[in-house]
Image (tube, rainbow, N blue to C red):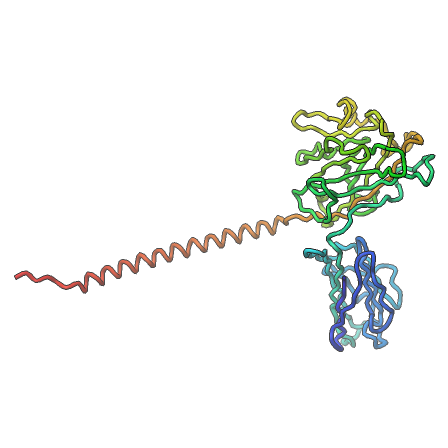
Length: 404
C-alpha cells in the first residue's frame, strides 16, 4: 500500500494511505487531507489543495514543485487545487525494490517566495515524502487491447470470438513467470496463444511485435522485435540470440525468446511489448504470410519453424505478403477462418548496473587491496625489525665464558 507523510509544521506527521496501482484511494477533500495521491499504472497524480495548512491562506502554485528535478504543476490546476501528473520515472523519482514491492519515491516541495517588493514571508516551507507501491508478483498475462495498427474484419459470431493472450514464462517454459523485473543479460520467455475452447481448433501466428516505453504502440522510440509477418528481426542483432522455440508446443501456442534490453538515451526502464496475433486454420500450410522465422547466425540463413526455409527469404528483402500492419492499404480481407488482435505485454522493468557505479566499485576495491598490501608490508617490516632487536639484546646479555 502506498502512502504519504504530511508534515504541516504545526503537529506530528500524518501518514496518508493512497492504495495500490489500479486501486487508488480517493481521499476526502478536507483540511485534514490537503494532499491526494493516485498511483496509476505508469504515472502518479498528486493533487494539492492551495489551502495547504488549513488556515485560509492559499499557497501559490508557482511555489510548489515535485521531485528533485522540480517538476512544475500541470495546466489542469485551478485556484483551489494544484495538480501534478507525471510518469513514475520522471522528476528524479527513485525506485527501490523489496522482495514483494516496487516502490517509487518522490517528494512534494513547498518553498514560499515573498510577494513583490516585500522582504517577508508568512508561511513555513514544507517537504512531503510520497511513495507509490506496486506488487512485484502477479499475473502478467495481458488482455487484448483496441487495435491501432489495422481495423478488424471478421464474420465470426460474438459467441465464437477468439481470445488471444501474451504471457511471460519461466526459463523452462513450465509455468507463467510471476515477476516482471529483469536485468540486462536475462532473457524474455514469451508465449503467444489463442483460446479455442469455444471455437474450432486454430493455429496462432505472430505478424508483428513492437517494443515501446509507454503503452501507446505508436509512441516513440519504438523497436521492431518481429516484423514482416513472422520474421524475428531481433535475432539478427550481433548481441542477441532471440529465436522461436522449436518445436511448437501445440498449434494454438507459439513461443519465442528475446534478450532483455533497454532503450538508449532514456532513463525509463519500463518496456511494453505489443504484438499483432492472428489465428488461422489448424491445417494452414506455412507460406510467406503464415510463418515463424528465426535467423541462424552459424548458417547465416533464415529458417522457418515448420515450413521450408525459402518462405523466409523475404525477411531480408522486405517484400513478404503484407497483412496491412506496415501498409494498411494492402491489407487483404480476412476469411471467416481467421481473426487477429493486438495484445500488449507489460510493463516489464529492466534494470542494469550503472557504469559510473561499476567504476566506483572497481576503484574502491583497488584502493582497499592497496591498503591491505601496504599494511601487510608494514607489519612484515615491524616483525623483522623486532626480530633483529631481540637478537641483539639476546647476544648482549649472554654470559661470557672465561678461559683460565
